[in-house]
Length: 130
Image (cartoon, rainbow, N blue to C red; front, side, top):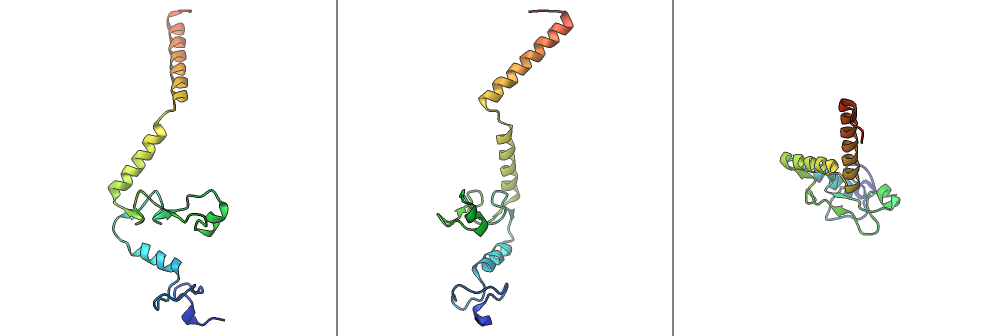
């Protein structure tokens, strides 16, 4: 059984190793570091974590860290987890613009629908039959 000097002073978990007299586990240290950053707002891309798991393995997601290659640093905030409000707005504007873009097949289908509605309108209004 380990003593309190071998446990995290914040959450009580066992410390993996004593690092220069620190008494916080890595998770608590990371959480406090993120909380200490007061500039800007949470990055919308990584939800303020500064990194994300870019792996298809469910075990990596359940553990909170990728076993294979490690977590991927967020390109949007550079790993800080915080961005300016303008940068956040640009992120959402980019996502909305990306969603509004039509694929070539969707564009053809939309043009066909517009042509069909135009033809139906002419038929009903003027009695024109092709």
